[in-house]
Image: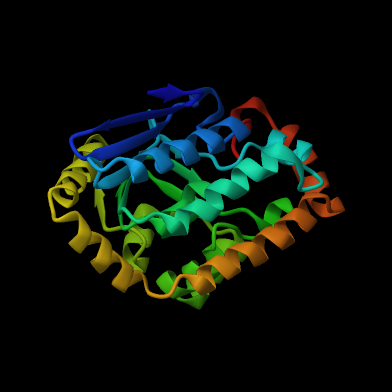
Length: 258
């Protein structure tokens, strides 16, 4: 199944979801957020599926949120914002494991989504960055809670507030990435682990994952707190100026996002 610029293929116990908006470096549009949610929800309902797998395409994982959509959603209202919010709220609710294969650029949501993944494999050329503050915004997807837990406060502040890009090797050392592999082996490695997970007793996997993740109530509360501030910031003078400045950058930067 292919929906807009998100390709979803279910089989061999895996729900493989691939971003294919190459003209915009896989920056997520409103339609893509909707397709991602629908693809994940379908995989959750399918009893033959044991694991979700996330990929980008052709050397790009995701350039984050489409800045044009942010500019249009300045008030933090409407269907567009709601589609993104649906995706953010869904991430912590997924019962099945998530494996990600990252090759290349992982910006904004392209990085923060990884905090919800159980296994992450990256190529050496991958770069992780979250320029929320540079865009006049605040972190999202629960990253303000999950990032300090996973990386430690100092590195989380460096990533989320200073906006320092992290290499794959640094993310490996920090604990977000499980292994750094050759770019040609990213998908093979991720799929190999996904197949192993899909072959295990599903209920035992789900219960074990739940125990490891612990109480998700604080995460849900943090996501809602981030959303409230994010809505406010979208219409702020700082953010609107940053969006306009971004969209006037040279074409090579077009499509990158938060």
